[in-house]
Image (tube, rainbow, N blue to C red; front, side):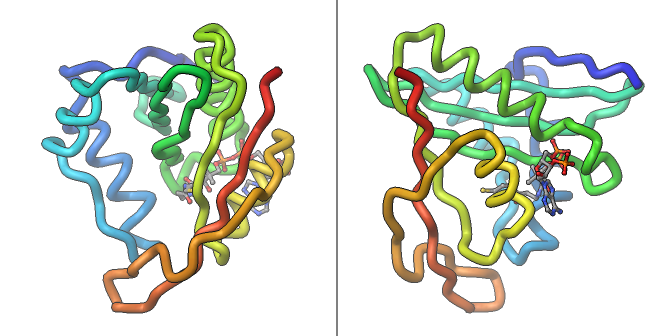
Amino acid sequence: MAMVLSRLGALDLDRAAALHAASFVPLGERAWTRQDFAELLASPGVAGFLLEIEGGDAGLALCRIAADEAELLTIAVAPTRRRQGAGSRLLQAVVERVRASGARSLFLEVAGDNEPARSLYGSWGFAPVGSRRAYYRRVSGDAVDAIVMRLSLS
Ligand SMILES: CC(C)(COP(=O)(O)OP(=O)(O)OC[C@H]1O[C@@H](n2cnc3c(N)ncnc32)[C@H](O)[C@@H]1OP(=O)(O)O)[C@@H](O)C(=O)NCCC(=O)NCCS
């Protein structure tokens, strides 16, 4: 199974929006538009990665690096491509990029009920450092707590 990782660029906005929608709409979250991706990719310190498996779009990840801290902005793997290591491959790309920049901490927020993502982050050594009450507002109107996690890179 051939995985090809590349940098997410300004020509990939529609692919990014499609991947994001396929992953987050089923979770009841708002899909990011191509405009959202355009603005993020144009903002300082943001880097994105796109993963293809056997020639098809399989996943993406975006991070923002600011001085000695970085944040995982999003990570998503197409539903048909899960549990094949794609999420880990994308997270590895982010961690390598952040480490190379000299940042010492990688933060993220994850919904308390998102077991697959919490499990992925736990397997990478992220540890919970706090929570934000009712941080996610689902399309249904439900509010869900976010857990803030941190990976130490020092
Ligand atoms: C979270 C997500 C990115 C994981 O992608 P993935 O490609 O399936 O992850 P991997 O195959 O690399 O899994 C790596 C490890 O994560 C954990 N994991 C991943 N999915 C899991 C699940 N459904 N249940 C339990 N553990 C899971 C396992 O430890 C797994 O290792 P294993 O397969 O050897 O047991 C994917 O489920 C997704 O896109 N979800 C929707 C979007 C989302 O929630 N993004 C994160 C928002 S904070």
